[in-house]
Length: 244
Image 1 (spheres, one colour):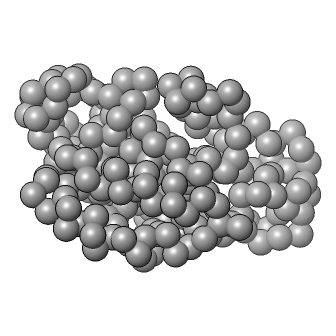
Image 2 (spheres, helix red, strand yellow):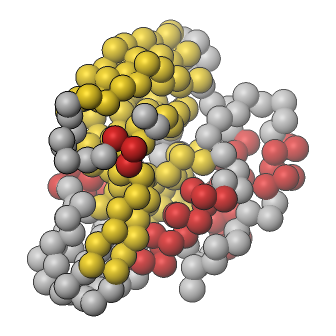
């Protein structure tokens, strides 16, 4: 059973980290509509996104290795499967699985173990973050344009800069497979994830970004997430979210 009430210690975490530059925690959920264990994790992600027990930015990343089992997840992407595979090598996990939660690129939160999940969030909440800013965001004729800036003056290593385009809300009526007959609800579903540049250690970064999206997507149902991550993929140094 996955508990939704994991962060009663949020106040004490904030108190201990009061003198540390802090920013949101990036929470990545690798999931699939073909996996019967995933709907409770999807609900957990929606809960922390809505309640913000600590400042968090969430990403729902749908992998494609369940697509052969009777249902093709309409949000699945092989790019996201590859991202998860890279994490497995970095975190010394034997095989990719769903649902899997990665926090700030370095911590694997074991849903169902409240103490361990709280510990992972506590460690990330106390870590210093760099400032990532999204400004001048616009959506027009299937193009998403924004200005992205990163204050990386305190970074000790070079890092990659990513922009993710995500659906704020998504629903599916699953017809076949392990979740056949269920209506599933998701939040922050990644539609596109691109590396848009790099920031050198001790430096700043600024760039105008132009990305394409599907014309059929309602701009009001989009969220744009930018984050800075050490190669590997490694530690997430900072992140930001903006909605059109």
